[in-house]
Length: 558
Figure 1: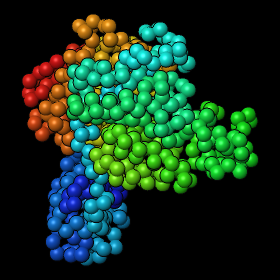
Figure 2: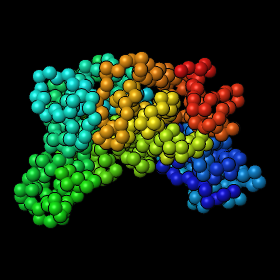
Figure 3: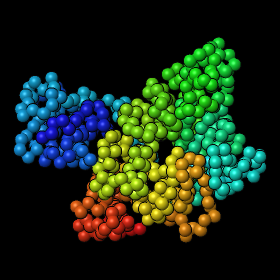
């Protein structure tokens, strides 16, 4: 047995409560190294008197590791446990002392694994609406313009022309309201909007005034109407929180420019000098953008200010959550306060971080609910676009991604193929429509909530920012769109009502087919994708090269 691969960490993605009397236990082993894994458990205060032994299930299998899992329903949640492993030759106990051939349960209080007590406050609640949602992301300036009375002098891009970094096309909130029935017809029931607040740019990530809707987009009445119209349709709204940095034109930073260290806001930023200076740069900024100074989110006054913004839009406009821009550069201390305040304002409001990498430390139940799952994005690109993964490699990669987080978090991840910050997926797959359809099927069936970037449904192309932010083409012939296809995928998700439990991702025996099986509350699905150059087979299923097949409740669809 490869003991170096064995891993179990209490109070982590390897050990987490899902209710006040249920807990999930995971164990990592070397791939294909263990034939059977058991857990031996009891209350930590009655060691040796009431042990129970249950076999664990190999739930996930990644590139190097297998992940065994079991859900325990407990009468006494003061849990003590060890693992019992069989590698085909020997049985081993695995405790805090590592793998041993024997184990003295009478002295187990020294070295068993334990979850001392399930406290209700430590249980990450799954927001069911998020886990079942289908998102539509909108870059507002490029989606739709419907406000005929606004000042249009700022518009410098003819609708449909290729944008540059300084382009303004005129999209607004009234335009979004006018297209809500269209969005709903795609099966999407949640919107994620890029920032709506007053800013000099087209993207609005350099905010001047957080308490004012940008006049290019509309006003507070338009935001009120948008939320009302969404909620009337059973839809949700998530706004973009830019709390890592701010515009240099913001009144707080302008006060520091004017007064230097004498400003009451000097410590709201991270400055090395008496006054902020852009050349040579002596203050922290977003990336290398001197016009976007970074907030000092370790400062309690800054925390108070930013949290007041977030709760204002929940209390005054009843929005349904926040997507957190550049969230991994902001202090954990701030996000812990942020969560408490947001959930107090609206318990069902969701918190979605923009962390491009493993964010398990943020997903313990004290900070975010989920993140934008760019790890899924990269896996999809490596499989469908770049040829870096075959079917087995793709299965391994996705299983390893799922193993990063708890079951609860996996059900709430915001999965995406592309966004305003990436090349368009359709362009990355060289405008191969079959690949895009296969990738969308995977997106909608993978654990978590799918998010499509506006225009995906009409085969929008585009390279990296700003080219990915092209204008929406509503004039395209409906017969030449993916509207009905995306609606069908969304309907399958709703009908089957998936949850992470019951997910099985693997490659066919001939290694040609990527296979995803989901067991839903109301029905099961099976997806087969063949990105190889020859026919792939799994039992009695055959899939041609470059094709895919989807079965729902045993019958083939799409």
